[in-house]
Image (cartoon, rainbow over all chains, first blue to last red; front, side, top):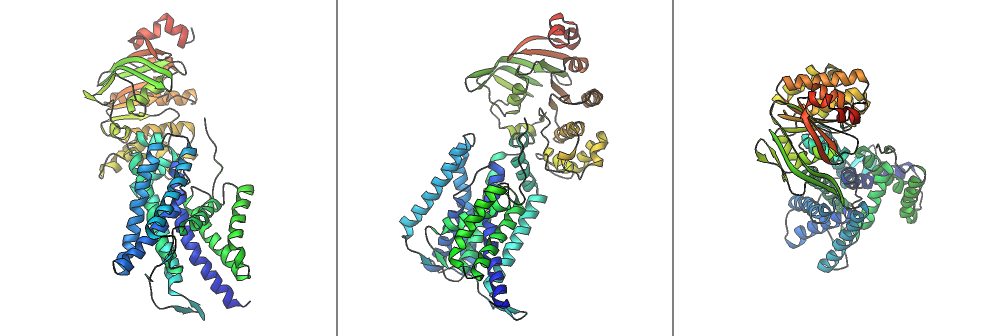
Length: 294
Length: 233
């Protein structure tokens, strides 16, 4: 194994890691605000991929328009799912909410299968450009753009959550919904906004994922979603920087496993990470132990 | 200013508030006193819209607010400092105050923040700190400052003395008196009946979800039954 192979695997790791991170952010933000593991989140990515495919193949739209449509479709879908499936259960036990999320996930997968068929569709290249050679190391354009766009999205998200009025309202609602209402914050609007932002990141993730693996299939969201969920747990669910760190860790772990020639074990190792985290540090890297005050 | 008429609140099958009626006139300090579990906080939360009354009616400045959403009630000039302060512990002091002004827009918000800092200089010193690092008294001040940020005409305070040292309790009650003299109407819920009645104009005594006595605060201080139950003989 030579140096150049290691570096190229690291770049692969960063590329898939940044996609995991974008998706993990959606899990973490939603969990942070309504304590729901939104298992339909992965399937939103699948819908985004199909929308991009439809836009480019069936309607022959240009790639930029297809990307915008895919992201918009994800945002719309995320907000609609929240309104239709989760809002009515706001005061129900959390387990009902969780089961509903799994139900929504199955619903989306099976709808996709009904409409588009069980096979996969090839998504044409949306982003193309010259590949680079940095210090004698070949870096593909998609790898570079994926990493750059992810990092920029995460910076913008951090800015939004830390500085904007809506971002502060999100933090207030996630900390104490009742007190937030007493401040005049509309909880429904804030939660919708959270789903919209999380789904927009999923949409971006979807486009970037399709750049690396240009296929849309009904079940593509489930493994991707679960790995991003593991990333969120690893980083500390509910924590935004945690989701980013977790995403990159999972991506790099996969790349390292592949680099040492055990790529068949990739998925197994990721699930082993989940088990290890849950056994030894269930709160994740940045998560804090939650103490319930009476 | 506030007219509560025959409100009934249920938690599942438990009838927690049983036909409570009372009113608060503009400029008054009115206190609701009663033991733990008498329903004081439930009443405030019903007025704020967090709980719903079955039947009855709540009028604020002659408008029926019983079916208005809680976040809209704040914008009408009715703020609550909730029990246990409930400041946003992970947010900075300054951000907590900004949240208090959520319903307002424009640059006057910064002036209001300065006003709050003037009233509570301790908060200014700690403006960049997260609220979780404040002491109990400071958190109570922050909770009050935060509620004032919405420029309320009626301020409802739920157990502001809870868990505070006597000297701090006095300080908090002085501030309540000052706010009242500055024109804010106050509805004060307290277990510390002595303190509450000493600054209030009128008082209502609440027992297991019902109002059992109401009178001028001075009268209640001298009322034998009240003395026995709430003032330690």
